[in-house]
Image 1 (tube, rainbow, N blue to C red):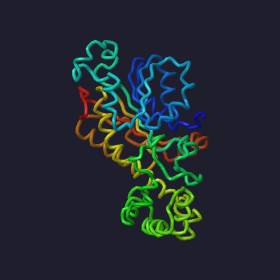
Image 2: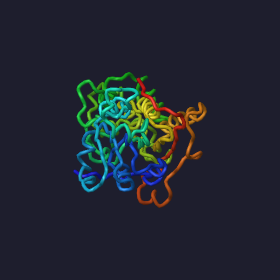
Image 3: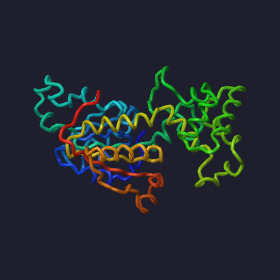
Image 4: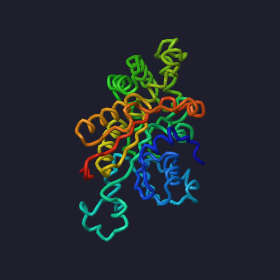
Length: 330
């Protein structure tokens, strides 16, 4: 199956990195490979480390890179492990690992750090439409909602959340991560429903949500004409994948491996993510370690929104590191 994902804010995110042809770049959320492919086209010979915790992402787009002139390393991992990935790929500079001194070409290309990092947060269209893991409330699928293609038995799934978590915990995450006004009613509905039978599919959960909320809300009239299950599904997905904590860790580790003058482009899709990114960027600027490339958030233009409605909620922020030495997070 090939990728159907349309990359959002493609030009703005790449142009904001201010790359050169010898750059070393981390695409921390590879997805459909749109950013990586475009960087290869614009900067032949660039070194790219492409991360995605969904192994199937690489399989879907491998043909896209057959005729492109760039050195890509695909890594099946979460971006919260950027530092460990760099170690494994022998891309930590010799000051940290003197034993790598024989890798002159890698050392020279790094010049003390990574040139650019892209974070394109949230779900890809492929995960929504084709993963079979229950991300979409429009498809009847098993309740997994994990970014991993093959979750391990010990990994938390959406089924675990809705069938075992307490009513209070459910209400807290649905309100806190989904900003859902009817979180308590929905949590109560989940707990009552699972007393009768296990909640197994996305449609099981959608039915519970529809029965729990007011009729006018169920019809999608308030707020912003969203489906009444949108915020609850978002909240459970964030909880399952620990997305907000992962984002905070990934931003810090990503910033630490940037070289002086290196840049970070971050595309977020909901207010919780953007709040974390904005706070992180402001703190780095306040500490004198970085400067904001765009003082105001960059949004998709009308033409892109027309071609790709998903882009209407995208927000891009770009940061440049100003400190002299990149380091390693332990």
